[in-house]
Image 1 (cartoon, rainbow, N blue to C red):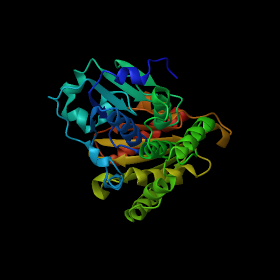
Image 2: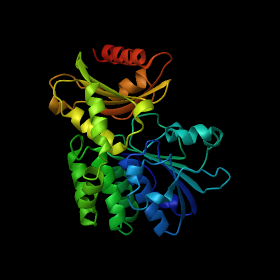
Image 3: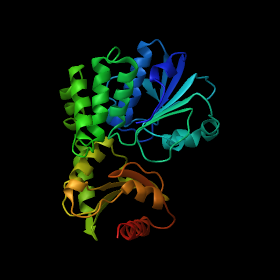
Image 4: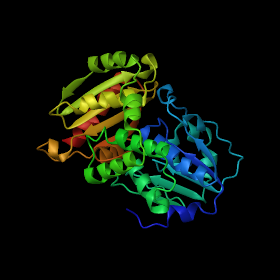
Length: 332
């Protein structure tokens, strides 16, 4: 963990605050945004929440309607907070639409993040790359600043959601004592675990079955790599829940060193989700997919879970073969 001033001391004299989330928002980012914002609102702050449009599967969650994708660049803020990401480019389309605005931000910036990607030099960086979920880090910061004073059952539920989703339901955490302690304390504070299980894992659109059919029909295992793909141009976008289900399935397959889920976004961009086995699962050296993503592609994440993008010209099939060749050479 970092040495830093208390979160409460940074917030104290700030009134107008904006909280940003990353593109393709997941449960950890959503939980980070809404738990922090919920406390700031209790403190009487004026809070705006900004992120790329959220998939309809998340619209059933309370408070999600507070998050907008309409950024008013003329509005003045006393503090700008980025949650669960570091460089502004990770805000996706927001950054593309307002690059001059983001590139011009120099002061009154707070980043609360746990990724190993670029360490953006904000006014304040609260960064813990050892945290398995940003929400466990966020919970510890909130506890340090205000104890349980403002952690309502709704806020506790959002923090638990981030922990559950970013650890794959507690299946690939690297600090189980820390994660389970935080989860237990949040349940004690009123976090609604049955609600989360229903909303996240028992309430999925039947379209998931079609997605699984596509993914399973496209998979192959070669040279210790499990690879599958999906063409978003033809089949449309899928929710983060669907992606989680796919990776829970892929991570349960024995024998591979790296699992890759390639999403063809358009005629020039493929998004990659990379996963590797943990030490207790294998008898070979760990593959650091964060390093792999940063070295050979764009973006990054964690040792065992990372995201990347691959830009290409030509056919998607040629691009996928190039991706496979790059990763195959890197891990061998």
